[in-house]
Amino acid sequence: MPPASSSSGNPSPAPTDDLGATLEQERLPAGLDSLPEPLVEHSQRERLLNAMARSCAKKGYGATTIADVCEGAGVSRATFYELFKDKEDCFHASMEVALADAMGRIVAVYSPDKPWATMVRDAAAAFLDLLASRPTFARMALVEAPASGERAFELYASGKRVLQSLLERGRDDPVEEEAIPSSAGRAALSAAESLIVGQILAGNAARLRELLPDVVYITTVPYLGQEEALRQAREAEKAAVPADG
Amino acid sequence: MPAARGQKRERWRPPRGRHRLPPEVIARSQRERLLEAAIRIVAEKGYAATTVADLTREAGISRTTFYAMFDDKEACFLAAYDNVAEALVRRISLAYEAEEGWPRRARAGLAALLEALAEEPAVARLALVDVGAAGPAAQRRYRAALQRLTPFFDEGRDFAPDGRNLPANTSRMAIGAVAGLISDELTEGRAEYLPKLLSEVLFATLVPYIGPAAAAREVGEKD
Picture (cartoon, one colour):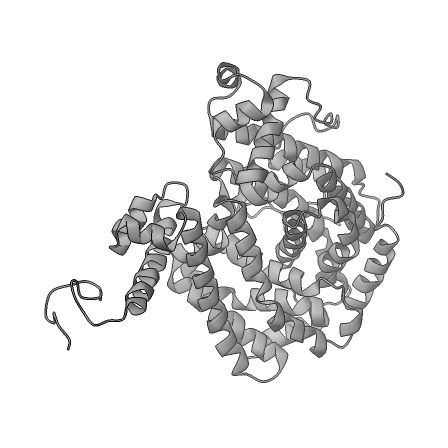
């Protein structure tokens, strides 16, 4: 069911059932219907983007220099400046790739026909797998970007808004009818994000999938109540270990 | 003997020249001044743009004194960061301990945190948001600071009807929810409105332990 209140003219995009429309609203990188190619290092540009993410993971965005990035990529300074205006431009491009990747995963599991809780679980699993497979990008996108200038923050925030609108579908038919604050979805996402970031910073990115039951619990409990959220979490436990590889 | 009284000075400093203050007292006051200055300057200029010279100037100490205390800017910032975290935890703890019953304790602790952050918007933003840009060591310090809140949240598990069955990471996640809501507000430049966030932050704290219905009831309860 689409939310009853439609146009209110507020600046932040209203949550919607239609993921396509949300992606549109957020002006996300184009070309989402074709899933982004895995970032193979076959071009200098991609090598630079990878090197940027690696350097951020190692010393932080602030301390990263263009020299670090060029050296890490094995690319000359001149080439860097042919491809990017400055350090921020390169960082922004890395973030765009990370975000397009994440959104591609979400689009792949999204279906309006799935029960909401199943969709939340599938999206969370896809997201955790992506982060586990790209820990340096995960770290850049979730740790560095929010604190590294407005452009990068905007990309980070737009990705988060997409996840939020996906989650807020839970508000449509809450099992318990108590008024829950409008920030409940945002808070739940921050809760999951914080757990994930803690794991990444502790060097446990490879085991992120194990967090699936916890993530399912925290994101569904405001909407479904404890009993049902715990049931969903137990259900997710079966999926907490990837089938293989 | 209070030696040089009456001289104009903005802040107390140990009198110059020969004096009777034990060296460790002098060192302590210099260190405190430095840590205080470090937080203020980094909050103002950003971590990357801050130099050791900024720190020594603001704290009124020499470069030599600085390097006797810290290896570099980062070490100094990290110590200053820990100081801020320590003070915040102390304030939360005082308010929390003064109440009975976990939901009321949580409410009091969160209110104290929001008020403390609202009093110093620049420091609040540095402590919760911009710390992400100060390098990996600072990011770990931020995580460690969040971890220090765990005991306050873990009590929710004992209070919860179904406490034993809750996910192992419940407290970590609840802390993350609180930090996220506060960071969002700080990012919007709304630090002074933080105290108004109490009911949302309280709901986010309670909901994983007692569910939405009970959490909403507790939030609605006025003391």
